[in-house]
Length: 395
Image 1 (cartoon, one colour):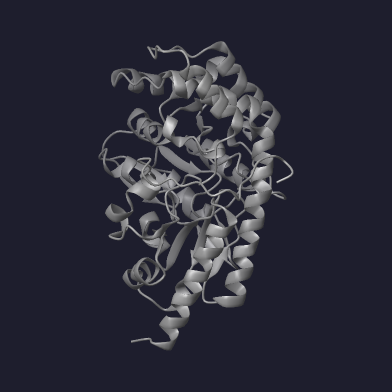
Image 2 (cartoon, rainbow, N blue to C red):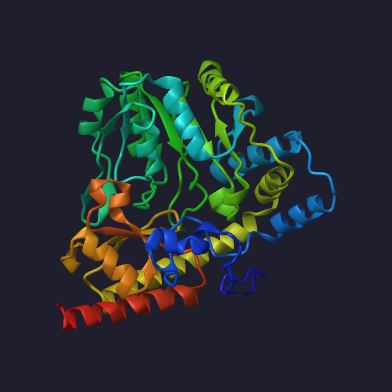
């Protein structure tokens, strides 16, 4: 590729103890499926990240590690350049991942038995963060109209009267929506009216397709005292195994409530490699990311065209962000169990079943498209071949 980043290069990940490949049998009962499920990419991380890790590895002592000023500066500058949000250093809480942070927010701002709003179909740890801490789920299902999802604000306001916390996924995983400023304004109005705290999971905020624009919820709020914004380089630069993310919390009391829970569990997100990768990614990864987004856009468009031409019974909901495609398979007229069997055992593809994201995901599958184009084409061809056989031999 002219950019110097070869996203077509196929890298063998088997035997590296990676979840995506080396746990296929545990996940699908079949170690031969082509995996297109867990949300990491089959692309090499930006060269600057690898160089930073190699440089740090050359020092032979890997002891307890501080977060340097330069790391905070890299995040601050990234948020300003990429998202137009000017943040302050003391707003930043570094932590070991967004999922632990979601659980921390639930414990910090609600009591057992109280309600937490989620918007299914949604990333499944949103459910467990609520149920496993003894809180009550208050589902505000997204509306699917003309192939596009939206928020049901009337229904949301009903729940907001009693709930203390809303877990927002922005951009949304798995449906791929990039929420527009007017939608976020409506959300904020409801939150202010009902004194609702919002945990805004914006881990996919950098993965926005050309023609779309992510809006940081807290940046457009006139009063952001009750907004916790979660960001990370993990999805953006394909370094989730290094487990370092950041919460941006302008309000002192809200920030203190979160850090107290972290401190109670003696959570320390720092290690010498996560620090090196975090800073290098935000400081030097922009060109790599811009090239990646064009590559992913073209892959997304090719998949949509392939389904339209070869398997019209499957429709990919138009992704505005993330490298995850939400596939509407309802026209295949299968139960969820039959869909799962078809994709795993007939097509040989390992995807996330839609029901993992709530009952609203019935009839859907989630496809990870962040792989070399030849891998994706092979996946499409295998699905098409299996579907032809299925239609010719329905019994």
